[in-house]
Structure formats: structure tokens, C-alpha cells
Length: 517
Image (cartoon, rainbow, N blue to C red; front, side, top):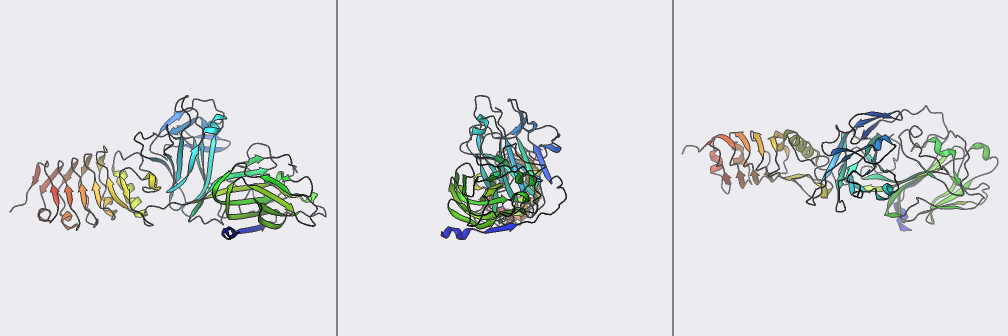
């Protein structure tokens, strides 16, 4: 029982109040691979070209009814086995929570005989989970994944990434980023965790998914009905729950047929060993209460979750922020002595807690993005966090270990780069080496005097012009400076020729001269 110490459990009873109708959510809806915007069910979807800089739009070959599934964006599988991520970058409001939903429908885009690929999805620097649409696609269904994450900066990156199981090009059909009300799921420590949806159900309900406009944030409430379902078919006015479930989920319930325990499996699939957030919702209409009472205990896998829950017309929600689970989960609602009405439940949500990965130092990210902008053809995977997750660092970027993640080396040798080298490279003060040889970079060499840890600079076989800056002579640990085969002019600074331990290469610059003796 000691593991129960990790649990933060609370109950809130809410009195109905008349609230104004919710407005549509503050949402960014992206139709991946689409060439133009569209309005579907009163909501505007944008094409994805302004959010992603790589990948190929494709039309699915299957016949589909949902307009969002007509197209996908496909990303190239790296044939050499290295892992690359391809990221959508969405502007957000820092400090707000966002629901992120990704939708996938394979549609045979990699060839009819090729099964759907298995791949990873990543939010900022955090591994979110594995995308496996195989079973859903075999049944003709799309797959969706939903999570809740805190915006720690002015943008959120949502990335698709191949893993060791990926055998064909990864893809995505749709991406939704919805800002959530500040009260939602606010018992979670979003500074250290994200939430990944496991299940969200309307109990006793057997119709289509409940979503916007019933749910103002367009969360999906799936049907869940058993033989013991007794719909009450009343439109209750329950409101004020801090997770803001839609009132429609209280129109039906799952209840025992007599005053006896109600036991059922939920969610309807085994869980991996992890820690979970659970919220359960209860209410019933006032006409059926009379002089009776509905009081029961709630247990999860035989462990008490909440004692003496009294369900009233006002409604109640009970939640646990950290509950360890593994395998199939059984919920049991057991009537208390003196209760003369059977237990019931209307809705439930379960999320797995996802430990957040680290983040690259913001100053380094800003500098590296400036360098990316100065290149005319930066590497295709230069999006999202440069260093995290660890298996998905940007091509040519080496990062430090530990809690303060810095860029410590750039090696973009023979990457086909053109453009210039931004002055912001001088802000990457953790760099020990810069290797940009055998490209087509032009312009002057920027000021690197602030990079006190530099040991090696390779700028050979490019088109750099101007003079060789004398600041290199003051870089204390510099051991290699390769500048051959460029368009440099003027005199070689004498402090470089006299710098002990420095290997200096300057040949192939026809207008470069030695200083007078």
C-alpha cells in the first residue's frame, strides 16, 4: 500500500449554474498535405505549408468520407538508418496548456502492398509515443492520438520521426492544437509532465463520438455501453466541473440494475506499467432521486479510490493525479450501507503521465535558428528542439549532457550548403568545434571571439571572402584553423602565424598575402 503515497486524490461537488454558451475554441487546425484551406462542420482548416518545411504532400488512394483524410504529408525514411525528425512548428501563448491531437490515415500512400509504417511522435524535446496505425487501418479506421502539454515558449513543435521499426515513409493526416482553459487538468505538474490520452468515454452512450460543439475544446468522448446500461435520456444542467466535461455526457449513464456493486473493465485494453491521471464524472437527474440516496465507494483494481461518494443532481468528479497501473483495470462501485439507489457513472478520462525531456538552452536555439535562416538550403531536419530527444538531434549538431543542454559542436562538412554564416554563431558560446568545409558558403567570416572554448575551425573549400579576422589569435584553445581554398584577401594576421600550437592552413586563396617581415 506504500505506493498510494504518490496519489493526490480529491473530490469536487459542483452546483449547477447558468453559464453562457461556450465560444469555439482557440484552435489551430492543420489539414496536412492539403493545398488550400477548407471549412468542415463550421471550423476552418488550414493547409500545412506555413508550419512545416519538409515532406511531400500526397493524396491517399483509398476512398474516404472524411475530408481531413483526403491528403497526408509524407516524410522521407532515412536509408542509412539514422533517425531524423520532421517538425511542425506552431506559434502559441507561453504558459498556456494546449491539447494536441494528431490524426493518421495511411490510405496506401507508400504503395498498396506496403503496410502502414510504425514511427515516433515528439512534442518539443519530449518523446510522446509510438504511432502504430496497423490495426485501425485494417478495419478501415483512422487513428488519433491526443495529449496535453504546457507551452514553455512562444512555439510548440510536433514532430514525426522514424525509429528502428520504420520500414517506409512516415506520414500525418491532420494536426490540431487547441488552447485549454486554465482550470483543465490543473492538478498535474505540467512543468515536469505531459498527459497522453489513454481513454475518454461517455458511459452508457452508444452513439457517435461526442465532440465540438458539445465539448468546447473538441475533445473526443467515445461511446461505452454494456448490458447494464440504463440511459436516463435527460438533459442535465450540470456545469462548473473544473475539467469542463460537456453536459451531454450526463444524458446517459452506466448503472447497476439493483443496489449492488457495479464492476466493469475500463479502459477496455491492458495498460503498460506506468502512472496515470484518472478523472471520473457522476450526476443524475433530480426527478429520480426522491427520498432515496446514492452513496457508494469507488475502487480501482480492489484499491479504494474514493470512499462514500454521494451522487446528487449537482454532480461530482473524483480524480487522481498519480495512480500506478498495469494490465487490465477494473472499476468497482460498491453501495454503502443505507444507500437505496444503485451506483452509476457517466464519464471517465484517463491519461498516462509523460515525463518531459530536457530542452536545449533557449539562447542556443535562437542562435541556431538564425544560422538556419542564413543558409539557403539548411538540413531538412533542422526543426523542433536541436538536441532533444537524444536520439533525434539535428543533423551535424552535437549537444552536451546534463541538465543544461548546450550546442558543443557543428559538423556540416559536405552538406551542400550555400548562403552565408550568420553572426549569431558567435552566441553559441559552448562550441568547441565548427566544421563547415566543402560547401558553397560565402560572405565574410563572422566574429567568433566570444567562443572561448573553440579548438577547431574548418571553413575550407567554400567561398568565404574578406580578410582573415585577427581575433582568432586571441582564442585561447584554438588548435586548428583551416581556411584553404576560399576567396580571402589581405594579409594573414601575424598573431596567427605566431600562435603556438596552431595548425593554420590558408593555401588556395590567391589574393591572400604574408605579412611583411
